[in-house]
Amino acid sequence: LNANGIEFLTITTPWLSHARDICKDKHFDQVWLEIVHTNLDDYWLQWISELAPIGIGFIGESLEYTPEEYSFLGHLRGRRQEVENRLKYITHVVACDEKDAERINGYGLIPAMWWPQAVPERFINPDITSVNNQYAVFGGALYGDRANWLRHPELKDILFYLKLPEGLVTYALFDTLHFTSSVVLNSGFAANDTLLCYYLNFLRSIRRKSFIKWLEGLQSGCAVVNLPHPVKTYAGRVVEGIAAGRPIISWEIPDRPQNKNLFEDGKEILLYPKNNPSALADCIKRILSDPDLGKRLVTNAQRKLKHFHTAEKRVSQILDWAIDEKMPVYF
Image (cartoon, rainbow, N blue to C red; front, top):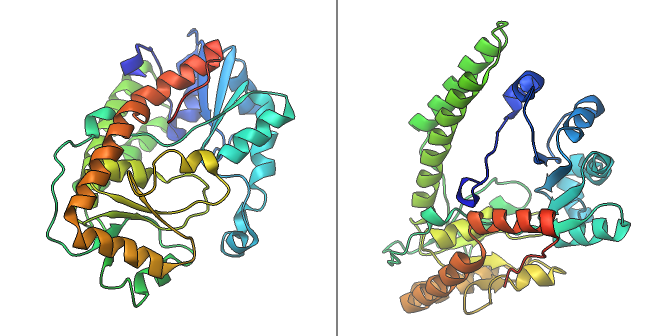
């Protein structure tokens, strides 16, 4: 938002109970709100809807899943209904799953925009160097069948789980910041702009340092692997791995043609079928045996990333769409 010349106010979850005081006497043109994981009730959502003429709800998860996915993520069965019940409090939707955006547009009630992942431009590393490590890395939660992929006979020696060092100072700082904030806010101390600004500056510093550590971890392998996941769009690790200067190997997300068009298979990314560990192993071996292939993939993908998928560009596209109905171009 800063890069787009927008003056904004951020309120995180621990501060929501003080949002009325913080927003008092302030004027807003837009409100951006995460509407999947929020636990706000109708009372709060109604108040938020009255803050600005434009309210954009961000849907950072898919709203529909396969029977297989529901078998290990049963708590998601009611997600679509819960999220769609919140649509009456907003004027626009930004959805990470192209099918959700398509369906919501089909209702004809509010407009929806598809929102692929992006990365801040300053974190794109142009220094594309090969590593001696003879393995690719995966970073992410080990739910569902993912652990079995890592133990698969054809993958166990060439696909490693990326686990950042325990006890990172940034983790302790994050916990300390929020413990201190909780004590202060629950003590009857009146929340104000100065206190919020101090908190946000500290939080952003912690998040920035953690993100840099994450990118450095992604650089430890010959490639970054995107294992199958319930969200039907590329996970953040795809664009983050490209930014880190590593080739990406991802499962091919079915029935999402726009997502597939984001990066060209064989030129900017390598794709493998969802239930085929052997195909993933073949992709990793291709990069291990041909370092020049990895460099070409990264060079081409970073070119696409800089042109279409920076966070600065994505924010600009959301603003243009919400204000002027200008549809974004992603490829």
